[in-house]
Image (cartoon, rainbow, N blue to C red):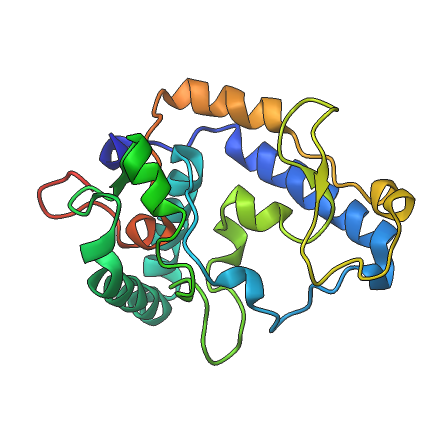
Length: 210
């Protein structure tokens, strides 16, 4: 279950690889990449995060509770407010934060909280308050990426980036994503449930199930 997860040791290496890949992609893209501090379009709308993302976010919150307790309390307050505002429509178990795996629940998730700001987004600065621990979806949003491991899957990028660029330019700026490494870490964890950022930030509920 999500409550009993431990962040694998290999996650720090995965994050380093991702940071390096993003830096390379940004260098290649130059001005084609519109991502800047304060651009928050990608910080709105709920999206599923896996067990590795969840464990990383919770490790980040634990660090903030020690190093910056006021900030940690503010983030948790925003997350609790997010859950209070959207929990009634959550397509899964609002007690555990686990997204349901039925076809109906997955279909409902496609329309769930699409306009809601991520509780990790600082409304004053327009920046992420848990940036160092952010999910993989956030780390790959912007540059051209393949969301599948095979070479046949198409490239996708933020709609604000590469405006006017042709396919060759976009392909030259592809961000290399270590899907297999992430999959191995998830296999090591042995947890398949998914949740959303808000539930990950508040941590387990008093009964230990979230």
